[in-house]
Image (cartoon, rainbow, N blue to C red):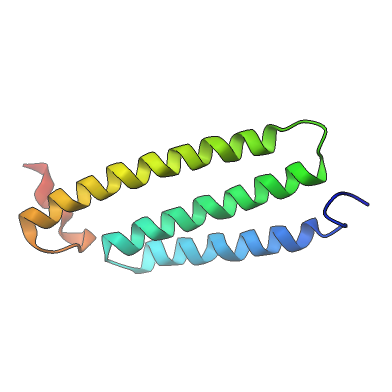
Length: 105
């Protein structure tokens, strides 16, 4: 019996569902804000999985360390992504990602 009570499979299933929802949201939507939120959802699913495995195998803290770095990368991604999205909205008055080739110029 581990610290999670033997329910690591439930965390894996929950993380899989969250990651799948994020992936479908990223692929199926044209709105760039929804795509950014979908990326955040996928990163949080990975964080949940890393922390669950770290709790199950608590000798070393590598799972929590990787989760911390993913949170830092997600914060930087959100800041840069929102800045690019605001610049794109000022140019086109739209947030549809299929019109994003206008930023090439």
